[in-house]
Image (cartoon, rainbow, N blue to C red; front, side, top):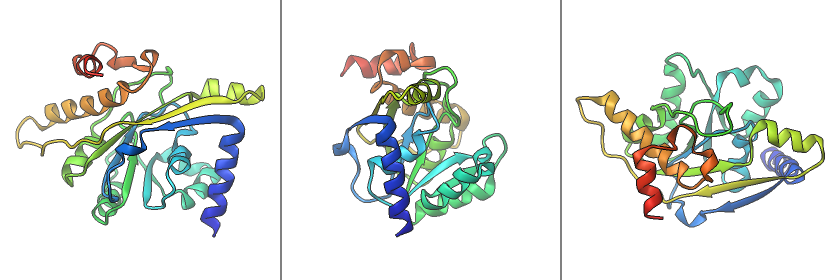
Amino acid sequence: MMRNLVRWFVRTLINLFAKVEISGYEHIPGGSDFVIATNHLGIVDAPLAFYALDRWDMYIAVAEKWEKNPFLKWLGQYFNFIFIDRFNPDIKALRRILDLMKQGNVMVIAPEGTRSRVGSLIEGKPGVSYLATKLNRPILPVAIWGTEDRVFWGNAKRFRRNYVHLRAGPAFTLPPLPRENRDQVLKQYTDEIMCRIAVMMPEKYHGVYANHPRLRELLAVQ
């Protein structure tokens, strides 16, 4: 009951400040054992997962600093936040994530690990690639734009609605990690995820992946 009330409250707030366009529902894998990999432009990104999908088997990895925020800590109880240390090996959080994935839950993770301060994609970290290959889970790439904090909250203060876009692309899987050159392969896998997100976004959001060969390949076959 409380979860439904919180969802209604958050959806009402988002609808008050933004017009959200969602596309790509047809790409969502059947079942629940997959990973959602998304970019991260603003603080409103996390609740958008529950705005777009009417399900409670999703868990969202959130930076540990937000656990100190009383409102977000409270909200995290209902939106399944997993607070994770971005700068140090957080074995406890990683074990919980792996256990939840083994139980067939959906994980929502931003490979960049933090909000972009430049309004476009920043370099992704290998965490999502590692988790997806560890349990052989499909990855659903999701691109979000229009949620940049400066723009979003600037418009909100002026009582202007923001135009927010959520777009899911085709799910894909990554080959198992080899025993050799694991770091190099994880970097390649992470670039693959980020480029599959970038290809769905307007060019100005491509950021550090703007000239990546893999992104050019994906753009060429659109």
